[in-house]
Image (cartoon, rainbow, N blue to C red; front, side, top):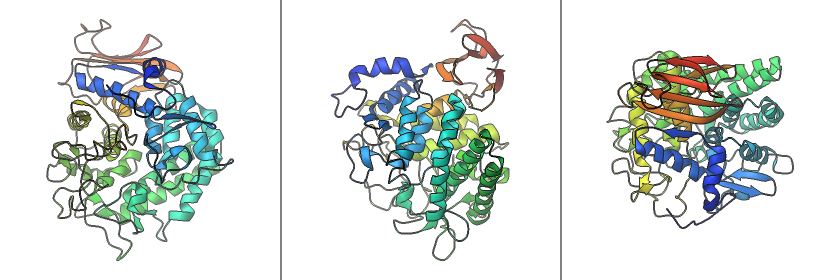
Amino acid sequence: MEEPNIEQAIPNAKSWEWMKKNIPLFECPQQNFEEIFYYRWWTLRKHIKKTEKGFVFTEFLIQRNYADKYNLISSGLGHHIYESRWLHDKTYMDNNLHVWYRGNDGQPMKKLRAYSGWNEDAVYNRFLVNGDKNFVIDLLPDMKANYAGWEQEKKAANGLFWQYDVRDAMEETISGGRTEKNPRPSINGYMFGNAKALAAIAQLNKENTEAALYNRKADSIKQLSQQLMWHPQHQFFEVKKEKGDTLSNVKEEIGFIPWYFNMPDATYSVAWRSLMDTKTFCAPFGITTADRSHPEFRTHGCCKCEWDGAVWPFATAQTLTGMANLLNNYQQDYVADSNYFSLLNTYVESQYYRGRPYIGEYLDEKTGFWLKGDEERSRYYNHSTFNDLIISGLVGLRPRADNTIEVNPLLPDNKWNWFCLDNVLYHGKIVTIIWDKDGTKYKKGTGLSVWVNGKKVASSVKLEKITGKL
């Protein structure tokens, strides 16, 4: 496909050997889904870099002048953790986390909090896949210290967390600015998720008082977010302006982020009505980062780094993760699995440039044109998830801490007659998930089945939520 530009720990020549040892396998009747699935593992591998402190994951292949040591940038770290939690060899991310939290003479890297992040949430959700309790408990003091740092640096007098839009990794927004200290649904969702994760890890370590403390912190963020960032007329979570103490009066894609962490109460699910509205967020080539009907939509100047409407995979991955949570954990009638599939399908179709698989920074919502497509900095941009959406969303393997395996595919009934997700390392066992509508493709029975180490543990004749014992 290419002449390699920059090669790190695993060069192209070793890529298939590495993939055979590390990745789940996926097949389905829709060839572009398969192609992008394998392409995204292939590109993730490009970002694994060897340092004297161990392996790290980069965001850009080329050096950035605002990065930390080893060309590390913290804005996409939550995405890196969620995506790589399915790799068989956990050494890569174990090393990466130790570098981020301890790589500066035992202290965190200087720029760990340079950007908002949901790292603690991601670390806990990685534990739900690999079951490595010792690792998360060992990292707990470092993660608590990081949370305290955020409280000290970015907690406003009203109890919400604020952030400059550029430090949310979302510069040039309609709602904010590079110098505005606005409480935003993004960072408050992240801090809620991080607090819930720290509570769960503290509970694992039998620190019941600490667990209760972090649960109270999470509850406070939730209540304040619902009270202060919900626009009752727009029925949407919006940025609260530092000046004037008003809401920003613009729907932005970050209003869906609270569901990434299952934060809002059920009554707020009405926000998702806006997602499939072609006047608001639903564009031909993806989910726009701001309301298409707003007068300032895409007015901040093309092709710099505008988050005033163009489609960013960073945000698409967050919204689709939140949507999968909504479909799994809430009772609502605003979106369905058909909508999830439709948006995921658009995400697949968007990941091509000049006829080849491509993942970059951001794209035009009407044409699908990658706005920095010819710039070397954009190529293989490691700033989103995709395979995690296939595994935990579309196929529906829902990671959990206990000995139950739960599978709830978000594939609509009428789409595919078969698929197989195989070689998934989950809780130390190999999981296979098969959908074979009439039993003729795999000859392992009709319908949906889940296999653990080759033994069938759950099945149904139709696509629905099923559970079994590991």
